[in-house]
Amino acid sequence: MKKVVCILTGIIFISLLAACGKEKEIFKTEEESVSAPESVTKSEYKSQYPYDSVFPQHEPYGKGVGALPGRVVWVYDTDSVRWTGEDFWWRPENFDESAVQDMVDDSIVALGGKETARESWEELFQAHNKDRGKDNTEYKAGEKIAIKANINGSGVFDDDTSGETQLSYTNSVLLKALLLSLVEEAGAVPSDITVYDVSRLFPDYMVRMCTEGSLEGIHFVDRRNGVADEAAPIDWSYEFSGAVNYLPTCVTEAEYLINLANLKGHSYGITLCGKNHFGSFINGNVMRPPEGANLHQFLTKNERNTYSPLTDLTANEMLGGKTVLYLLDALICAPSEGASITEETARWRQMPFDGNYTSSIFVSQDPVAIDSVGADFLINEPAVTENNGVLKGNPNVENYLHEDALAGQAPSGTVYYNGNGEKVENLGVHEHWNNSVEKMYSRNLGKTEGIELVRIMKKR
Image (cartoon, rainbow, N blue to C red; front, side, top):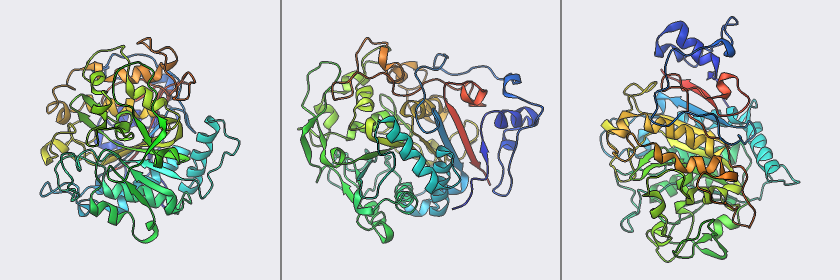
């Protein structure tokens, strides 16, 4: 396990900007490290850049959760993506498996705050179990883990399992790296791990590469073999008509869940960890369960202070309540779920990408914090907003984040429950960065509450 070589957080990042005046100077090679000048403190720093987001600026809403509350780790490695823009983006050879593996392991180290991925996985499980009030705070081999992937672009219209589409879905190389980290570092038994999306179909090549060698025995569950647990219907906190929705048995039988979502726009605005669970329930509509559940009415409202089913899914004790890790796949990003990924739309223009692929992953134990960071990146990216008219200039897409962070007293007036009759008080913390250049949050600036964005930057 390679040590994390360059973590830029708080004043380290902003002092480099102030001292150098050049964005490229914030990056270091693997052999170099950075430190903040002793003469500069967080309290002394005053940004030279104004707030420039469409989202209204405000103090942190809610309270951070996780081993290190409110922490979101962002790993950016330009070596991870090799795609030339030709053929399909998703082909495994378009990505450097070694670089992606390091990104996953380094992100876990930084998120848990320990020296190794093994120690940090242990810390993450312990923190999660402590928050759940469990007496046994350690992960034990034999406990089942369900991973919710976002396979929305595969098998969306038919039963094709080739994966041959320009639409977006979970990156197979990233999924494999996550599975290897779970097995080799966290000590999970492959046969106890299930990767699922009960509304779509997993590509055959993805299943093969993620069940070979030390990963033999890992299960995949999609709409063909997903089994509804009729003892586990989803109870919404707001009354509306729609099909009864059941959680799949791979979720209800699991002790832990990992939410592996995509960083991308959506025809309704954004789709991150919150909306990833639209593929976590079964009803009479096999191809499009969310439509059977009548959920799209809440996403198309384009209003603030309204009920959000995404908050209910995050609050549900079987879904958000079991989630030990949230991960955003941002290796290559799409403007929306229905847009083809092309070299033009996949090359982002905001700092630090400057015309390169996003080549990033984000991890957190705070579902609200990670989606808040994702929303900031998306709404400030021209390659996304110029190809997504719903997202461009639209602050209402963050409605669910306000509902999440203020769930105990939600702006809509909705009383949210955890699916087991218990009222929800806190799901995580929500705020926006100080500006699109520095990308700093409250904890980076020395405050005791809010988001902390930790950066591991490798630009070569």
